[in-house]
Every structure is written in C-alpha cells, then in structure tokens.
Length: 289
Image (cartoon, rainbow, N blue to C red; front, side, top):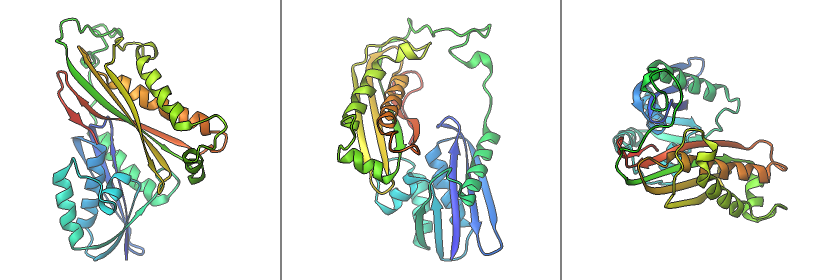
C-alpha cells in the first residue's frame, strides 16, 4: 500500500500557485512539486492529486489531504461546478486505482502534510511576481496612499461572496447546534454581527468607499464530520465600485463572533477567510473556489 500526502497553495487566490506531493514507499520517499503563475488554491489541490497518481504504479493507494474540497467532492459527491478539466482527468486516473481517502488536519504537526505544504508554497513563491508600486490603484505616482477616484465609472450591478471556515472541537460544534452556550444562540448572533460589520466596512478599512449595500446575507453550513462551520457572506449592490471588502468583512466578523462566544470552552479554534466569487466591474466575473 502506497501512502501519499498532497497539498496545494495559492498566493492571492487567484494568483501564483503551487502543488506538492510526498510519496511514501517504505524507505524510498519521493517528493514532487510544480506550479502555475495564475491559478487558484483549489486547482492546485486537485493538480497535486493528479500528479501523485501519475507517478505511482501501484493500484492500492492511500491519499492524505487537508483539502475538504477535494476529498468531499470525491467521497460525498459535492458538485463539480468549477475546474471540470481537472476533475475529468482525475476521474480517469481514479478509475484505474483503488484509492482510500483520509483527511488530515492542516498545520497540525503532521510531518508529511507539512512537507507537502512547504513544497506547494515554495512553488507558489517561485511563480509570484511583485507588482510595481505604481500598479496599485490605492497608491499614487509618489507612493502616497489615496482613495481611488471612481466618479467617472459607470454604475453597474456588483456581487461578491466571501467565506470563512471556523474549525473547532467536535464538542464545541455540538454545543452550538444544541444552543447550550450561556451567551445565547451563537449562529443567530454571528449572523447579525456579520451583517452589521459589512455595513460598517468603510469605517474599518481606511481606503474603502462608503457604500449603500442593496443586499447582505449570511448563511451557515455545518460539517459534523470535520467539526467545521462554513460561513457564506453574500453582498450585492448597484455601484461604481465592488463589494468584495464588504463581503469579506461580514464573513470575518461573523467568524470572530463565533470564536468570541465559544472561546471559553475551546481555545483551539481556527479561522480561514477568502473571497469565493465576484462579479461586475472592469475585471469581470471571477469564481475563485
């Protein structure tokens, strides 16, 4: 039985990314890695598995990954809305193998998971190109920070979806579900906090424009198996500038509220936040996970 650890990384998401693979075969360990100058974290996670399977002849394989996206798409039938080209290639490789999937908690001290992460991030750094100062819209030709002038831009419909993932102990998640916290209903408070924060984004982020948001919504997806809560913040507006920061702020504060209400019983909670989708504006539509 061959054991494989895979991981993907992306700086910016989308942006320069990399993938890493550790193949364990007795005393002969192999390390593989590669990258792409413009990609997403999810594409690199899938690519890592593809490259791993391409490089092993054995039919019986155990794959360890901290990617719930990859593992749950394969084992639980999550919809393959994006990255169809990679999923098709992976499915062809899986057809020839007897693969056992095992989720491993990222950054938890697992030697081989950490190595795969190092390989992936190292490749992403190689692909990263540093922007010149004058390419930043919030910096003028003298390098001084300033609010972008959007007065000449047309008003268009904009939408942004941001996500925060809160990982916790199983007991903590069950207490949330059963509403057993003294401070009250954790998810209800987190939802209100997220909406309030999204509306106050320009007061928190110095160079953000004050916006009259048309719609701001917070949803939760509870994952009992992995003891996680996925927060999905959706913001919509008709404006001259986007609502990415409002969605990100809403998701972040909602996650922080969960942390605050649960920290007395769980000091190990971890939070990840990212932009999932944006539409409208000069840069167009982008699905990022």
